[in-house]
Length: 526
Image (cartoon, one colour):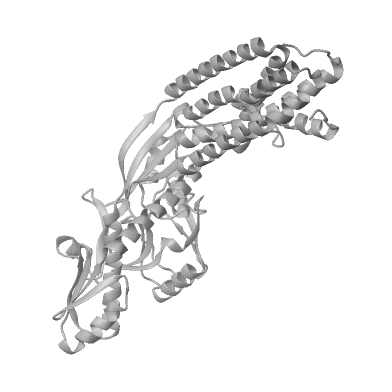
């Protein structure tokens, strides 16, 4: 155990040097860090919501919108299929979780029933006289609810990542709720606008066969609907209305990229977009058939613009203009890149943690850490003398290694994480206490200093590894099954266990062995 080859000493020194290098940026301000070359460590520890302030949001997924959208699409599919087979019908529509239609020709009822039964196997199709109903079952509703929440979480993660918020916490709560914790956000109102927008984009033809004025005073014609413009207003000061065909030419799901830019002629902010191969093919086909007709670019039920198709657009790329500012164009491009939410999100609860509270938490954590560190240092110094000094020096380096590892991994440090560090301070000397007490026992039975140290490290090693390994397993399980603050505690605890084992088994032993080789003492310090 006292044999220390040169390569092992070199590894220990390199690890300690790297720990110092990665921890130093945490003590520098942003101006100094900005001047540090990219090839040098410059990352700082990411602070959680409770330490640097930010927003806590509780969102609810409006699942009824998912059902309504699916049923509306199913109604259009039923209409298309019945017309294709020349089956006369009436009363086609949806209510609740059901789509129903009445077949006018009794000889076509069986044919219509077989046709509608094959459209969606998850729908329960029932025939009652000449009425055919398609009902969504509980299992299908449950599957769509789970899928909607999971998809919403993923899309919100993409949106928040693009805003530059570091280490957000996004997790599901219950059946249809999502928790967002956004530490250190500079513009919470902008983030809330981005989070709350559904961002469902579609390209639809404008209905030229019917009058907008007639639709406004009466019922919208079949297959069309009235939509307001996003910014344009009419002479009465109300949003300008468009009569738009319900059938979607191309949906936003076919977009692969969207970027803010400026129009070369007017210098106005615009959003340039690009479709995937399927979307480009469909868009080119529709624009070829409708040259000279206007089409509406619709976002969340509002018309952004309604340009006239001057020529076929076959390249799969285009641009959106609509009185944007540079910021709104950038936000729209961000939303389109991240994808549309499957359903609207409603903010149920909002809490803001001020940076002052975070600073108080950091100060309290530092104070508690210093008290704990001072108590451990004094105890080890009085109890073990010179060996206690070695253990205290290793404890200091252990804290540096923890800080450096947190910076390297960009792990989020939370208030419970500080508690994990404080716990690690006490646990870090446990291994040294076991070793030093074992050395004392070996000395009492008459062993020489070198023999006692060798036996102490050799016999205590198994106990140290077993004790720390079981705690490490507990920390890993806390991280896997925990969330938020529990994970923050688990991260610092796990890192602290690994670094404390390194400093106790390797670093402190290096100090002791170096001292023994240089002094060759006849008696060990008490």
